[in-house]
Length: 192
Image 1: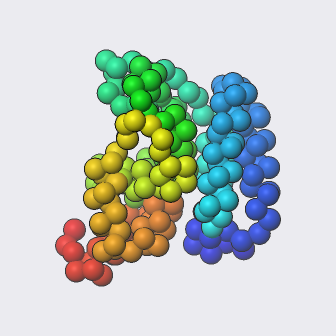
Image 2: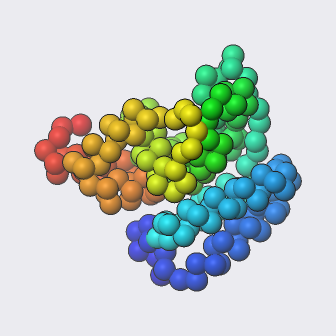
C-alpha cells in the first residue's frame, strides 16, 4: 500500500530489485556496486518509509565519470538529466569522507527527476535542497572526513526545518513537490 512517500509492504522486495538493477548495470565495477548497495541498505533501514523506486530505476543505468578541478570545484556532482555521477578524485583526496560523499550523491539521485532535484525547482531553493541532502547524509552515515561538503547550508537548513517542519521538508524532498515546501513557509507566516 502506498501513502504519500510511505511504502508499506515487503521491504526486501525493493532491496532485491535494487540489487538486480545494480547487477544489470554494466557501467559500474563490482566494488562500486557493493558500496552503493551497502549505503542504500543503510538508507532503507533508517528511513524505511522512503520509496526507493526512483533510485532503483536510476541505478540501473547510472554512470560514474571523473571530472577535473578545472571543470568543477566540487568533490562530486550528479547530473540528473544525463544520469551521470561525476567525481573529482583530486578534491576527494583532500580530506573528504568518501562514504559520506557517496551517500550525499545517493540521496541526490533518489530525490531526482529528469528536471528536478528534491524540492529545488529551476534554481529556486537549491541551497536549501543541498543543505537538506547534507543533513540526511550526516544522519545516515555521519562524516569522518577532515572537510565537510556543505556545513553552512546544513546549519541554515536545520534552522529552516524548525520553522517549516522536518516531516514536511522530507515529504517535499522525496516527492519533488516544491509546493509542499512553499505551503509550509506560508503556514509559518513566511512570504516566498
